[in-house]
Amino acid sequence: MNLHELTAHELLDLIKAKKTSSQDVYAAVKKQIQAKEPQVHAYVRVNENAPMSSPPKADFPIPIAIKDNMCIKGQETTCASAILKGFKPPYDATVVKKIKQSGGMILGNANMDEFAFGSSTENSHFGVTRNPWNLACVPGGSSGGSAAAVAAHEAIWALGSDTGGSIRQPAAFCGVVGLKPTYGRVSRYGLIAFASSLDQIGPITKDVHDAALLLKMIAGYDPMDSTSVDVPVPDYTRSLVNNVKNLKIGIPKEYFIEGIDPQVKQSLEKAIDVFKQCGAQFQQISLPHTEYAIATYYITATAEASSNLARYDGVRFGLREIPGQTRKSPLIDMFEETRDKGFGAEAKRRIMLGTYSLSAGYYDDYYLRGLKVRTLIKEDFDNAFHQCDAILTPTAPTTAFKIGEKVSNPLDMYLSDIFTISVNLAGLPAMSLPCGFSREGLPIGLQIITKPFAEEMLFRVAYTYEQNTDWHQRKAPIQ
Ligand code: GLN
Image 1 (cartoon, rainbow, N blue to C red):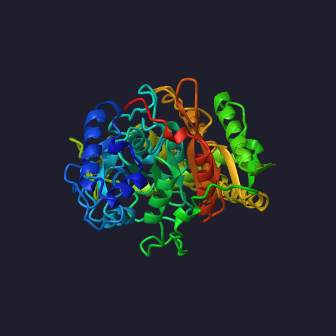
Image 2 (tube, rainbow, N blue to C red):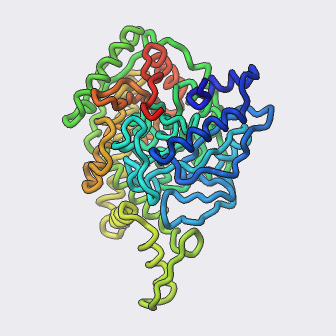
């Protein structure tokens, strides 16, 4: 039995039955990391000092990968940026605290696009992660390390963060399950901020059951995050039922755009058939402001990012660079030199875009207008949910692209977020799960979207699909 290839719920059953132990599971995953990491590079750093087993009564004695933007006390956390090199957080993010309390063993910091800016993990200061299904392809991003680690069985499950699709799109590209919870469902305390009104932490797992377990572990109100919402956390495993009879599922007519890969479209159509056979009813819905989603997202997200990244000045965190010669004043010189050396090209691009749309004279035309359109996008979903219980879309318009294919064309990269970003603008929960493979053998993802705090519906729909298909059982050739 290859322990590292099992799901968390399978391992928990075995541990409970004393057929294996947390030490054995940890050792198996560590061995896999040693064997596959040179090819995949899912981790920025592997944790060499983690406890190698869990306390005997632990609820979730399962090894986990944590995206490099969640603070782990005393352990270098860098957001895959040079500017945070050497930064050791003095506290644990709330999600990390919860994982430690439930006996999780933290395997290491998973690779990501610098500050979560990107859709391919190519913007990491520490080098690209490779897709376990085809090493010439990107794993998606920005949580590419987390998704690749799970797909390559270098972690049993992982945490990612999603500001505009960064959990769902890499999950789709790597053939695993990725869940972006409702804004406010999971505490963001200790998540290094990208765009605070959009960011949400969520699970990346091998199947839907594991996503339910991991979400239950990390969800809930936190006084340390004023945007977390005080609503009870249900036992999501109760929603793992194989039944969508008479549920109404909406298909947005605006999402079947030009540029969508015909193989992705075909897989979605087949998924619709599976749901129909299970008794679901389909109807076309309209999300009329979809065409403004990319512009709205990239104005809102970069504005918030430019403000959040102002704190990296060489004084308080990580890197400090002092030029050899004084240019303006010692202090200004240090700010400039640190930010110039510390940030990569995409981070600089976002800081400039965001600063521009927030500056006097442009604020009304860009940022403020963006906020207004954001409300319209949210209202589109409110209206749609009067007609249906869940919305079905592809997660991404294409399968994983080749490493290097889109780096020189940021706009093309931004367009690949078309199906995921509206969900963040509207604060909704959504899940990506495997729904097929291209002729080239690359995974295709299906996205399910529901109302705020209706994660239970999400699990029900996703679980039913999973029970009636076997895509989630395929294993990446990296094995
Ligand atoms: N690809 C999107 C971006 O680059 C989303 C990133 C994310 O969700 N962190 O902004």
